[in-house]
Length: 459
Image (cartoon, rainbow, N blue to C red; front, side, top):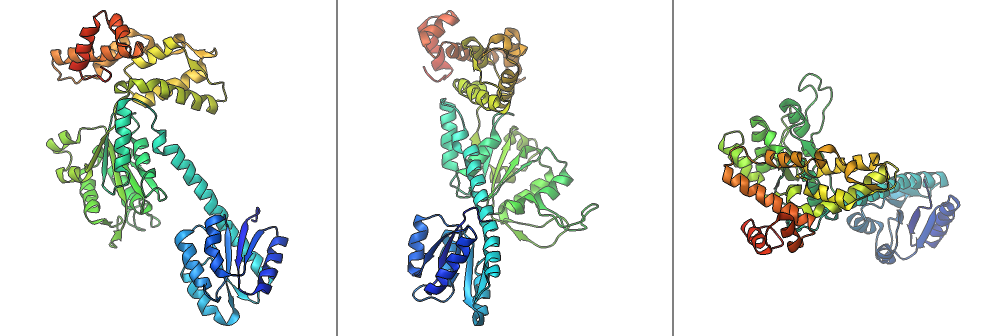
């Protein structure tokens, strides 16, 4: 690998600088030669460097000191140490301090080029990793939480305040609201952003498999354990462990998780060695954990450990102003993925999208938009292109009723339905109250009374 890799050469002996430059440039590398070691750090602040080759013994600033600065501030740059044949001990010490390799003086050209080539492979891997990390941060950062409703602004504010802390986070929301996206946004806005984000769905695995998945296992600890395996806690060390559907955790695993939260230590399945980890735990659930605690299915002490920072993700029906933005975002995404022209939704079709109750929340909306991008025949998505259940008024009312708690009394149910109908009218009227009142067949003053009564934003 050279791919015009930039090699910085540092040596107080000008003859060695000239030789190194000539050999590396003949091999296709871009080089910069510095005769004064004290100019290295200012140069690194201004320039992109892939590999550093530095002599060990130099006046004013040694190669060892340059290595220490680079490992602290530019840890992605591999450093090659040059040393005289009689000073191998110093080179070994430099390797212990993080040098990629060492080259003895006098060196052969082949030896030099092989060492630089290997360092270049590492530099390229670091570069790709940094690009991948930047892509992940762009894809899952706070800016990917789409919406301009008050509910979304409140959610973003909570994420921004929670991200820098070390405290555990419990995210509550219905299925399909984007709880994992919130967990990733917290991670990528935190000081742990460069470390791993590891996700586990506690409902997807049976308790025995989940225990091994979380804590790892030793070779021979159970049938089929043919080798030692690290668990998700170890893999997340330094970063964030996201436990989705935490309400499904078995009582035995609840005890083990509580111990990790208290002591930051655990043992692999079948092992005796205590492993210490530095992780932040973020959990999510669509269950009412307080009720689970009351009914004895979830440990109270674990609940309080997890629920230090509580974030509620609103259902889509409570942030209807965001639906046009989300629909447009998904339309662009799936038009690109399916290599079709992006299709806009007609005003009438968008009315149906914003009025629907969305029991499956954002995930359901995303699926509907993808279907429309693939199946709609014209340049615009019309009402007839929408799934039948979105177009059927009776189905919409039924879906709204199905979302109400079974034990709700009739008066409360009617109030909730009335509030939902008012919200839908506001959306269809573009939040113009006079127009919304006309759609509902009531006066503007009565509408304003209802908005205050039900605490609907925008009154």
